[in-house]
Image (tube, rainbow, N blue to C red; front, side):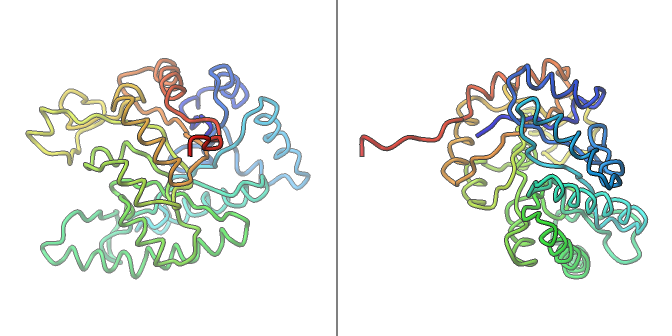
Length: 324
């Protein structure tokens, strides 16, 4: 396994300077945002794809290669099935351009969200269903999956495969149709093939009450990328109001849960169990740090996460079982 970082946390710095910081910290890989929700501070899709000479792409690759780093993924998290046609088309274009750039870079994976449509053709905003009753909600789910989500992703998978991207890593995130292992596997089966997989981010699953050991085993062979991010559930607020919480992330003291950097959420034993189960399930790729801890600065949150995860990651290949 390699330790990586999602570079958006250093978006206030040029790519080269950001990579120098990561290299100094001992990071081995970088995940770069290409637009949509992550922004494009370190990757100008228009410039990279618009240069027929290939010079821009070669320069981009050199920034990473010359520092001995690897590019783990291009990330364009978005809602590609947004009920607003204009917003959907905007975000879909960035996602397709991201696939085209991955092809030119020889990269086989991108990271994004499944998206969430409206509840009907007349809706203007997304509608995330969390319960089966009244029956209207089941009608919404039927419309979203059968008329929007599955047809869209069938076409997107075909496009990705045609351009050498055989791993679309969907981050399971509440608010979108794919938010847990069950919904991820449902979409993967519905569109056929092996292109749809997971960008596994424990933080979004912990607060829903999931055990990451069980999640990883359920997704055996389907995990294509991994975000190292944690969260804590507030024992007082959650016990009073439950874990569905719409208060702003900055209202930490009143929220039922908040994001934390690795080392300030679940303990070392749980993270060692996560890494060990990833290994057992054949995931030996990048552990990419995503910093969204509102209690820690970028510098401190990142440096402490790197130090913590270096003690957790199993970086070497296991040797022969001389004892068996």
